[in-house]
Length: 136
Picture 1 (cartoon, one colour):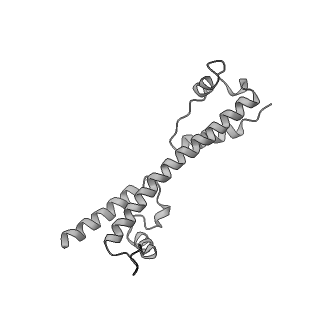
Picture 2: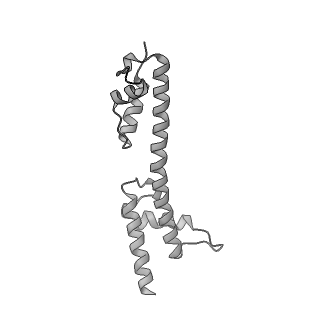
Picture 3: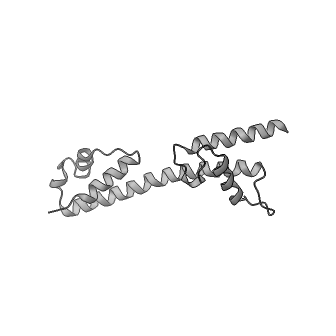
């Protein structure tokens, strides 16, 4: 008898990340409409299903991380324009992190902002850069 804990854990994680899994449809697609429940799957089919979900989870996670990474890079680029650089021209990440903790709207490290919080931080830095440019 197959233990379905791994499947349900993956389904829960994917749903939490914003993906939506319809178990019956997924199984039907995988088995050409021949089966519709986990209990009907052979151990080999179950393993294929779980491996597929692991790949889906990785792809969803990767896309979210890429969006967050782009937003962090925009924050860093804008703070560089405001002078947060080292003598050799590289970003002064220590000062940037200090700024985010001190002035960022949630007062926490940049990597601690989640995908819903980062856009507000980006907007805050954009507004600060805009004011700086207007003063010039």
